[in-house]
Image 1 (cartoon, one colour):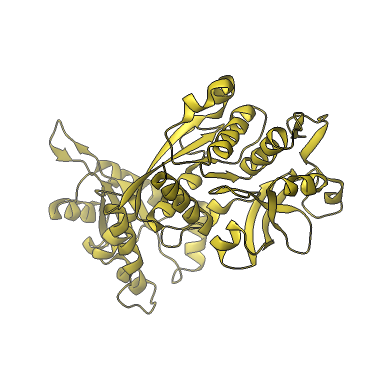
Image 2 (image 1 turned 120 degrees about the vertical axis):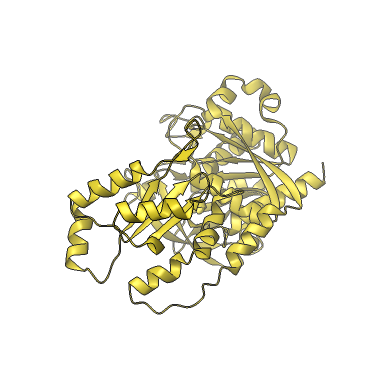
Length: 383
């Protein structure tokens, strides 16, 4: 907050302060209460932060009387009091709602920026597809941190973006991988009923076997599977164990002494920046194999994606995997590290060592999430 105060003091014409506040409605009293807003505005003033706009979150639109009251007691022009009521369908309606109140134009005027009528046609198209779905797709997410509501927030949103692109209604079913591990002998009974499954990233051994059995279930039943980071490593280990016959195959993260480290810290990493015992972090370019499902999704050979991991696919097993239909369809540009893995002769079984969910947007869904949802829709049609 002190940094905000100083920045505004040093560059008063180059920034504005927008104060977001909650305006509660007390059902018992039958009235809206503005005291919390007045108090929060006053507290910020005491430390030298003055609001140019007040955005009022509320259950319903505020009356003109309430806006007058906030304007008076917060010493702010009434036209700078913007209400932001609960939207009917999705949070993606909010930009359209704020545009109708002219907030974008008001901000531009205050900053002396050129402005014209905002083009929200893409947002309107997003909302149309969400409100008018053609079908419904059910995706199962099998993860370690399912009990924490926001642990996979970006993954869930990217799935919704993929659903928007295909104009389908999306239902996400969450499965705690540790519970699946405890009942690995009846995994189908525990997680069945979804059109496709996604295993997200994570660390540690807890729930590891449940993820592996999920991948096995999808591979054997020809159900679309999407593995992110650890989810790709799961896919590799499962294939090595149950197709290559390497029953001891594992990741050295889970078993440092495994006889078949198909996922490991490789010697070739040690001389490379941000690899080896640390993490591979940030954006890396990847070369995608033409003819692969990944190439069909991206539509180009060189891509760039964001990483956050330590362990890699062990190229010593690459040839054996390829002979059985498991391919590394993407490698780090000008290198050998595996970035994308696919199972051939499967409707859609793809794993990536990076985090595509970080680049997905409602108006521009990530191509892999878009194609995953499409594959789930086609799988549904063939049930």
